Length: 83
Image (cartoon, rainbow, N blue to C red):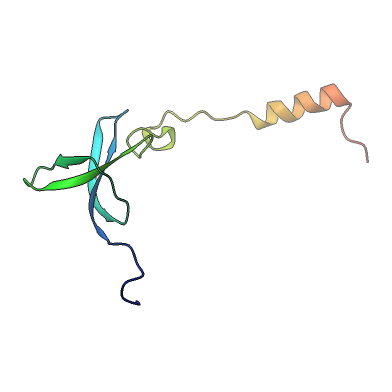
């Protein structure tokens, strides 16, 4: 890598406020807000709207769309196929 052209890559805490979940990782994201982590160090904190703790796919609350019902409704409404 060329020196001086990349942003600093440092530890950052990402916090999902909706789920009350936070995790420490390394990132180029920065923030003015800080948080004291479990290890006693202070890290920048980035608040996110959704994470694996609150996303419906990961929590098991995802809705399954009834695509077959939609196709049947379309065919009833517009007269089926035209081949």
